[in-house]
Image (cartoon, rainbow, N blue to C red; front, side, top):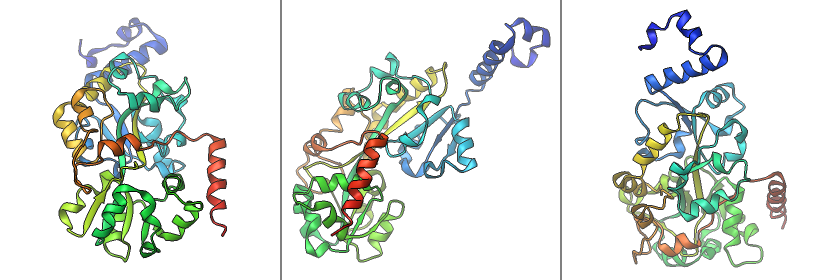
Length: 337
């Protein structure tokens, strides 16, 4: 029966009350195939956005401004939400449904399962990992730095880089890099090396200033060595920070829409396109896992991190209030000489 021919009596006979309203809303949603998905567009590579079904309604949301009415409305109206680990603490996971049923959770590799263990038991099944992005060291006009960068983060403290490094705005990422440097006061010294802290326009500043080095998510810099011969990308064998990305759902039912999308996401052609743009699917299928096993001998490679780099790289667990206070204290202490 077509939805437009429902009469008032048929509607009441359908079951009545709130259940009927819910059923009809679900019916109309299934009929049109329309779901609403929100994400911060600047965080996602083009190849990933192209995997999203065309019939889904897509909304760009600014996670840094969730107090604004426009962003609040987008968040509340979303059926699905794409978000990374840096912003996961800014939303209330109680507003989302469990989605890690066997159809999805069986796809996840060991690194995904280990990451999900950071969440408490109530929230673990509400976040489905859709990708992991490694940070890269971007070097401009300094080929002599490549070998040192390939082996260790210690090179960031060399005198020639004083005031010439662009660091991420995230203190937590900076502190994790400092922890990998063998120096008693590595955090304080690293901050003294910084020219600025930037996320959105990092590459523009690097190219058009006296900066020599920048730390950037791979998805934002993968194409630069091809268009600017001065630029080199390095992934230290010592490991790099990792940015995890997730999808969340408010749909209690109709999860087949999500399963269908994930099934398409892990097709070989999409895995190839995504990894070339710095986005790696943490799924256990063999082809997806092959992208984490780069054995290229070149120290600078558009193929991404080496297998050794992946093995030594580190994720960031969701912050609780105590850990947040600890990191703020550590950051502030490093400001004093």
